[in-house]
Image (tube, rainbow, N blue to C red):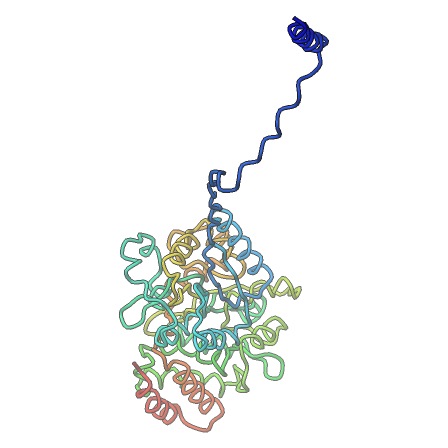
Length: 425
């Protein structure tokens, strides 16, 4: 009986404690799972960054207006093509060829270039320029270019570029000096040119006619005379070349033109100072009249012609390098060559070479510039193969020997022709 009482008391004590709300003992602390029990976390691959195509650009446009225009147009292209980065380098014109040759020697290449058109054949021959003939097959814009500028991009029947901008030379004349001797219009042929030059000359005060007669500027000025006489570089030594040289000698003997070596810059200075009544020069001189405060009255006229009309082509071409980015660079070239983007780059001091830009009021609205544009349409390029620089030196020597009286036109032409023939393509 006593044992039952003890058992009941124990039960009652337990129930009383439970009824007082005493918390049960805390549950055991869970053991963290082992590392092997954690499911592997999926690795998210980073989004790949799209690599830009870098196009290296080389030109020699250091004129402030031209520089700003080119940089502006490049900026527009890059904004429209964020996957392309254009790295432009502008050098002095005298450093352009050495830059391209040094790059080739290092195994590098400029993807796009603006180069002097007489250098086109040489760079194409050396494998520096890409042959874009196949790209041009389906490009309708090729039909818009004047013959001379387009021809300057062709080497051995293949196309290695697209014309960029052009210039041509023509005749400037002083209106007041013309009126002074009773002349109203510019000379139209060689006979009138020599006759006008005599009338306009005042010995010791001014020459009737000034023209460049030395270095490349001399060749640049002489070639239109050669073409007008019916000759060409491959025929130097013939009657046409003798006739052209004889005209230059007659002008010197008449004391109508200087015999000492002068280039296009000195020719302009003499004309602007009233020391020459007429001159042969290019449109690059037009801004100088305003910048130099020249007040004399002057006009420009087409070249006086002989057997045929002719002027000479100056200016630049676009070309692509033979690197891995030819296809991308071609898209850039096509875009740049459209009138919308080409015009702002060409307008500062240059002339258009596309038919669909030739009537633009910004050029032909000025009567003087209009004549230059017309001369570009008939201008011929200096496209005589990779040896043109050596050919030009032979012509320069021929000119100097004649105007200095060292050789007759016949002797000088014969010697130059013998030098030139082995240098032709």
